[in-house]
Image (cartoon, rainbow, N blue to C red; front, side, top):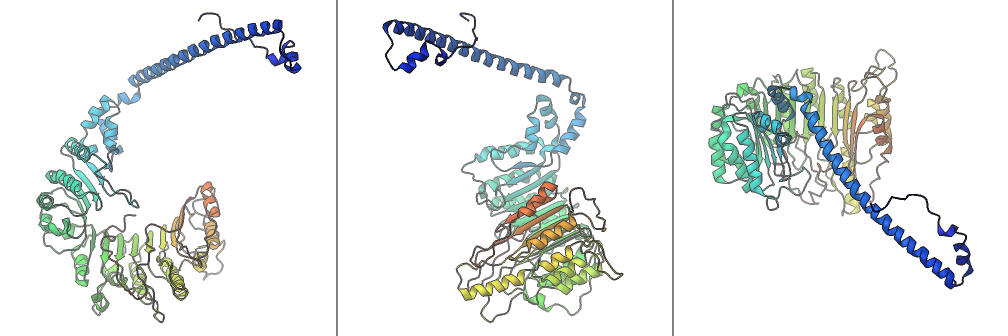
Length: 601
């Protein structure tokens, strides 16, 4: 520095006894005073210049010191790394840690990096160990469709598809001889890119352990390569094929099952009988069936089933089944029944057939999904759901089975409150309960007369009422020997999707009896389990006669107490509220594609 830094305080001129009178006088300074002021001004300018130089020099020193500290911190990390306990970990143990840490490598866009790639980029040692650990490179989740509710799938025009494919190929090479776990979703994404990816996997078919393909139309050459590949899959344990019409499902022969001695899980868009399928060893099946005989065939051929998921038909043949059905006793633990939508409310006929045909003493989870899209009624036409929900068949299966059902999900089924309560009474061991009321059509743009009819339909779909919530309340004391026991005493998670007129006050009262607070014991003094999580989706239509939903603040406040809360006010993306059936029309909705993975939520 040019001179010693002077940081002594300065006296402001507005406090100087010689300057203040001049400021207040309003006159021009005299020549003598002006000469003195010019000397002061020169002195101030010099001081400013010197201080600015000091500031610049100090900033430079600060920058140099920061760079020095960064270098020292980096040196510190290196020295600590050299003595870190993890360096004592043998490579074999590190490999096991990596295998536990990496389950699936996700490929969704050009910017995403797989878990295995992240681990291998930490340091040279980790890269060497990762490259010597084939299993962390062998799991693939390739999603060209984008997020579930997104309207923008993977755009090959904006992404470098060659780099995308090369990255997948590199993972395949590094996986060496490890068993492959494949999950490809490409119903909306670019078909050409999907074909390239499937052709990458085809030569490695002998290593496939699980394969899940949900794809749209692909090229004929790719279909042939996949058909050849599926004939050499000796390790295949789980196969799931969901394909659009005219794509991989219709172009691949089922002969490949003869080379799958370890196959346990099978999912397909359609059930197709074939002698080569190792039916007797299958433990999980998900498929669509189109006739009673095929339902019976599936149940007869698979005595070891643990998980059964059926997309049941709406064919009229199900309405005239055989006179007597002898229920089959099977060791099924998970049962999922999805009924296709159909005008007229006959979507539940397949549910009745399956429930009458089964006795499941080991059943732990029951899911019944219905996609009922209501058509507007004619003026004198009765409601379509009346008489078509097979309440007696479902109750009969639960009574016969005498199972300890832990999870029950009823979605879109046309229940009334009494029917819902009777079903829940048969599941006293249920820990998780999901009740989804039927989605109702949007009455927008209808005449006043039609609006009143649709409002009547909404009331018919509304079964989560005060009476149901009142029965779910925990009573402080059960009086009398014949007192009705608590409904769902083991309940810990309650999920509701409701239509209009939902009684939020009654709902909150019920919640408070099952969630006294974060300090409440796991089992309440009444013997009922404490609630852990709630989910409430409130579906509304924006029209003049719709009541506004109650303020959800009281529900959201429970989050602060530790209760897991999910609340959604408005239309749920899972349901469609467009007017699918205009007055005077009754076209059915094609639900073939939406039904293949309904239990993946």
